[in-house]
Length: 261
Ligand SMILES: C[S@@+](CC[C@H](N)C(=O)[O-])C[C@H]1O[C@@H](n2cnc3c(N)ncnc32)[C@H](O)[C@@H]1O
View: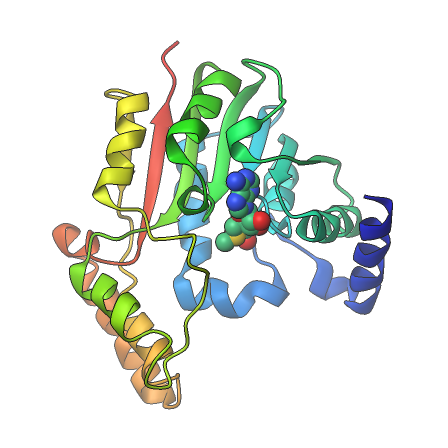
């Protein structure tokens, strides 16, 4: 960890103070492109509303990556622990926490095998981690580390739209359309959600707060070449996203889990 911390310090020395700054709504300039493209700050806000007041609560950031969400949680007054399996990402996250003047305990462990104490967290938060893990085993860990009455919120991708999934399989990576991610991950399917529901009967609720659909077309196919088209497709997401049923067919979802008291 010592070596990777040095790398993190160098990375953060290379960033200006304003580029290292994470605001308490999660804004973080180096990710701004993705956050605005995907409407992520709105989803963080939605997830944070579900979690409620964080001040003085013990909060676990699951699969924290480079840590901007961990820092956001700490800036809201939570006592934050964060884990990930990537030492490199954790080193960057440590640097980010330092640059933002917040204390966060980072640990390098897999979701499926956490060494954290039983019933040690009031709240769990995670962004785009569940689709990387063995869900049944991760759910056992969520249940174990949450205090009775604790809650967990995950911002995740979704496989509910068959057209999006067909495009992901047959178009991404071909015809000049970029492919992101690796072969070990897949957007969460209804059967994945069923695994979570089985672990938390009657206490797992899936929310679709916004629609991310036409903006993906703009990003992958039209490559955001025309500002007018970008604005139009973003507007389409906004207008069609007013229809609750339509929002189910976007690419993002928020999963809210409770552990009985
Ligand atoms: C898509 S990234 C999301 C990172 C961060 N939450 C964010 O929103 O920027 C997924 C993260 O999950 C981590 N990860 C993958 N498998 C994991 C596992 N089994 N346990 C813990 N973390 C894992 C990866 O190292 C990566 O940092």
